Amino acid sequence: GMDSESRFVRVAFNKFNAPVADTEEENIDTYFHILHSVEQQKGLDQVGPDAFEYTIYSDGTNLDKGIFYYTTYTDKQIKVVDMNKENLDSKDLITFDMLTKTTFNHQN
Image (cartoon, rainbow, N blue to C red; front, side, top):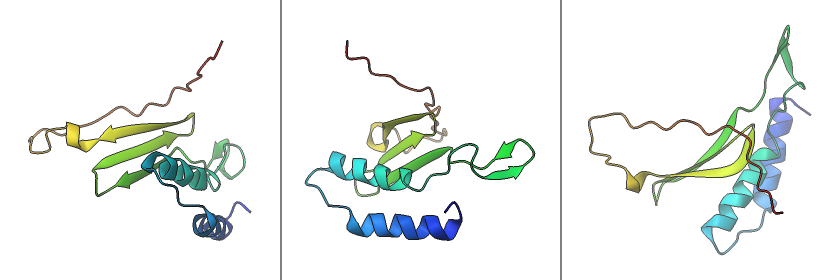
């Protein structure tokens, strides 16, 4: 179902039954597959006239390494922001534009 309870049960089941891989990249990929298994699609959950609830983005953070990962509704390619590459002692706010343009990787 599209209700919160059904989505919670689905994500919990997926999390506890997903294999743990040997590399961070594989585990991050699995993590996003789990999140995408419960995301809201446009057009399925109407919340008002011509207004629909949907998952705008999904994210996760490796707190030990200071790395932020995210995908957007329009681009499932995993983006990586390594906070270690930023001056975290700066008094200036650090911002990044969310990359939302669909990415196609042509192979021929």
